[in-house]
Length: 150
Image 1 (cartoon, rainbow, N blue to C red):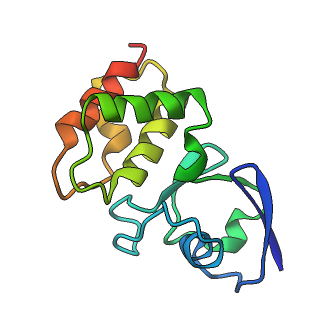
Image 2: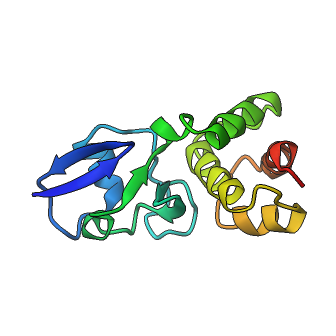
């Protein structure tokens, strides 16, 4: 039995130590906002926050998340930066199919929490590991830039 701090609540889970956090979130706890993409940490669809940093939950063993604060898309809007990002996503009509957007939003929030005045290059670098098959990159960057204090 392991205890995880997810979205501000402790959750006890009885899973193998090497089970990816993604499957714990989705299959064990029913937090399905975090999506499965590639399974090898290359697309960013499964991005969550671990102590405020964007991480790929598809390759992170649950044992590595014990003792850390995990935030998923379900709770990211409870922070001022998360609310601002979600609002900018709507204002800039970022979403097309929507599949990658939870990972995109999680990456954008982590970027802006680390760099509130992110410039264009920081935005490009900070979002570079998150893929969008619909190619809404221009709108994603515009949404982030609109709330950046740069």
